[in-house]
Image 1 (cartoon, rainbow, N blue to C red):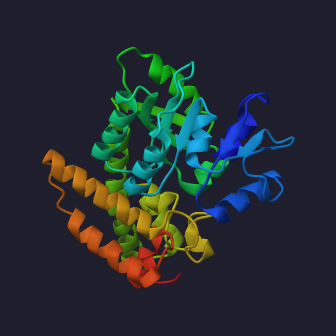
Image 2: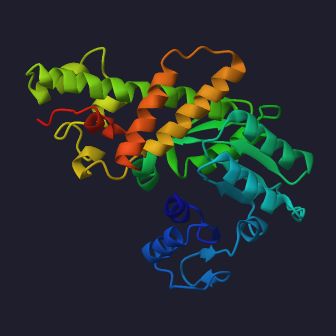
Image 3: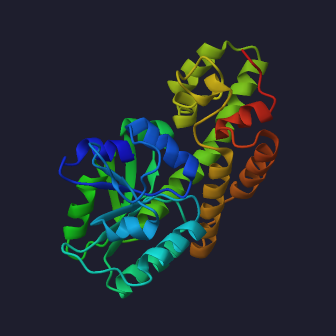
Length: 304
């Protein structure tokens, strides 16, 4: 995402990067040609500066984009950014949080930003995984105020630098609601795809014909066509790399639990959620942080 931003923003603009994960930061520096060390000063010729902290990155930026694993991380980062109060800038500082957390927590963080008059905050969780982030083909689900219309118009072109589709789903928090609804469906369809493929192969069906049938019929879904858990069906799918990379089981488990929490708060009934959560709990214990399509192997899926 950062590399796509640097490649597409004006050369005169500076990209300030901070990552608590030193290993990830070192890898990024290596990929963009920044010499080791040098935090806090511009990397000559790259238009990129490595900040010492999230606070320092925010202080130097008009637009702040955050992507973090859990609500506690987002809350901690914004606590550091907002206290003490940031110096005001024109135009107003814009915070875009692309983390997947629960909508209620996101609204609390948005309120902290807005009530202290330190900028504007929107939620913009994304879909497309590591592959989409690298290719710049992500889909963003945007939750942003429509009171003036200017905020959505300001945010959308920024997200389009990192993706191909921006869906404005409503007021702040609605982007996350849409993301969790989608990922709840994904959690269920991934298990169902693994079960259906295993069932067909155990009945003696040819794997390619079975996949062609499913993907040309009413059973087709992303898990069957793009991320099929059986080797030889979806080129580049994690199964071709022993389920390495992709969307980790732990992340799927987290999103499913967030969807269940949000559903309980809204009074929505999710009949399959608890069983799916048990499945991913067991898969993670068995397979670790493999791609969540590894549920096929956990089920004892037949190899073609």
